[in-house]
Length: 96
Image 1 (tube, rainbow, N blue to C red):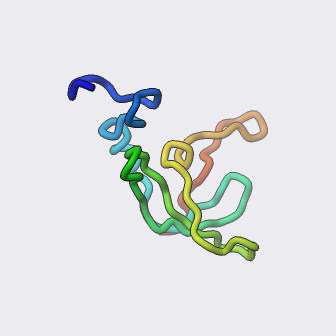
Image 2: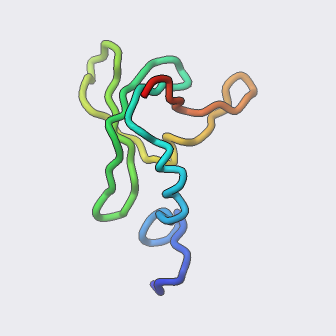
């Protein structure tokens, strides 16, 4: 692949990271509320060394049978979901 070619989600190396950097910087450590109502503590970001996919690492702040770390790709973490006919953030910062 040429260096000047766009590298979108369908490209062989994953998402276009330079285009995502501005959005990813918005994901800071802190407490986030999922649109379904439960809270999670975001620890930070990771990057897959094989695909360059950026993921958010977080842990639940409620009793669960999986009280370990979780991760979700950054695009999905930041996306909007349809809730009661309105778009709302999947995760929203409530306390940093």
